[in-house]
Structure formats: C-alpha cells, structure tokens
Figure 1: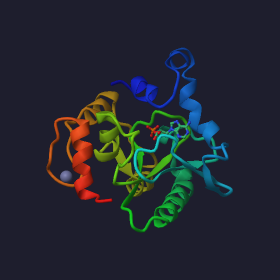
Figure 2: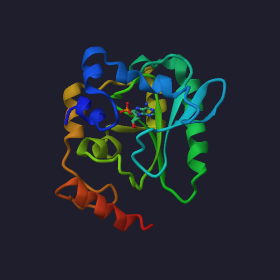
Figure 3: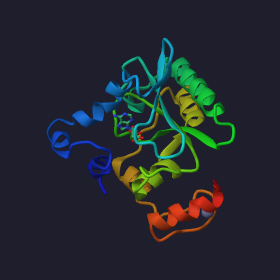
Figure 4: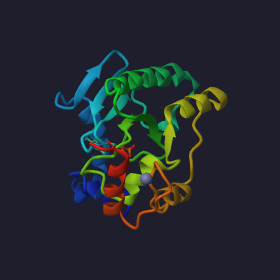
Length: 197
Ligand code: AMP
Ligand code: ZN
C-alpha cells in the first residue's frame, strides 16, 4: 500500500490528495481544533492523533513553522528538547502504559511532529503492515536519538525513499517477541497476549 492509500483509510479524499496534496496539511488545522488540542504553551501544541494507532497516541507540534525533520538545524535544539519534555509529561499521565516518543524517518504530514504512543497498538486504526512497521522498525526514530544527532551533526540524516520503503515493507514481526505472524489480524490477536486488558 502506498502512502496515499494509507491515508485513504484515514478519512481523506483521494481526489484532493492527487490534485493538491492538501490532506498533508491536516495537522496544521488540527493544531487549532479544540476537539483535538490537549494542551499548549508558547512554543508547542499537544493534540490527540485523530487516527490513533494505539490506546494513547499524541502528537507534539511546534508553533514555529518547521515542516519536517529535514528543516531542523542546531538552532532548534532547545525546541526539540522542549518537545521531548512535553512528550515525557504526556507519557507520565499513563503510568500503567509503556510509551515511546519518536519521529517517523519520513513523515507524511506537514509540520514537524513528535509521536507519543503507547505500545499496546490497541486501535482499529492500526490496520496495515505499513502502519505497524512505521512504529516498530527503525522507521520510528526515538526522540533522544534525534536530539543526539542534531547535537552532534547539526542536522537529521535523511534516509532515501528506497530505504524508507524497505523498512515499511519489512516482514511482520511482534515488537515484544520473535513471533512472525502471517498477516495483520493474526498479529493483532497475538499482541493481546502481551497486553492483557
Ligand atoms: P506521520 O506519518 O509521522 O506524518 O504521521 C502523521 C500522523 O498524523 C498519523 O499518526 C495520523 O494518524 C495523524 N493524522 C492525520 N491526519 C490528522 C488530523 N487531521 N488530525 C490529527 N491527526 C492526524
Ligand atoms: Zn509477541
């Protein structure tokens, strides 16, 4: 499934995507949507991910117009650290849950965003192999690693589109054990054995 198909599942109109790519700006509107905003300060907004891929899934976005990791420079280090700190506070609201904070190596949506996501992946919106691999392979880059890389090199290394595709096409594997399910329904059933409700 291509990136476009992935978003057809998420309520976006494929014809407008093809003609304008307008769907990719959805997070910028979402940052102003009172139904999605959890909290904000002078620098960042925290929203609920509208198509949450787990029980708890938040996005931390800067108010500064930074489109993606590609545009990040050393001058953004204090902001990246602040986004991280805000993400940690969100994660701490769910002490019973295992949470990870990170960025997709190649994001689909504009405005830089930090994912704060629980590892149960218990959500009807998590449907495809691409969804799964985007959160459980190296496609998901921990927030600390991004900060360390920008500290060291002044920027974020961009993987090629071939490398990104390869990560998203990785055969399905449980993130908690060696089980390799044949398909997503079997994976979703299996994950429940690790996260008893
Ligand atoms: P990424 O692949 O890192 O660009 O992830 C974009 C995230 O934004 C996904 O987790 C989507 O579920 C989420 N998303 C897409 N559209 C919206 C929207 N309009 N409001 C809130 N979250 C959204
Ligand atoms: Zn497992």
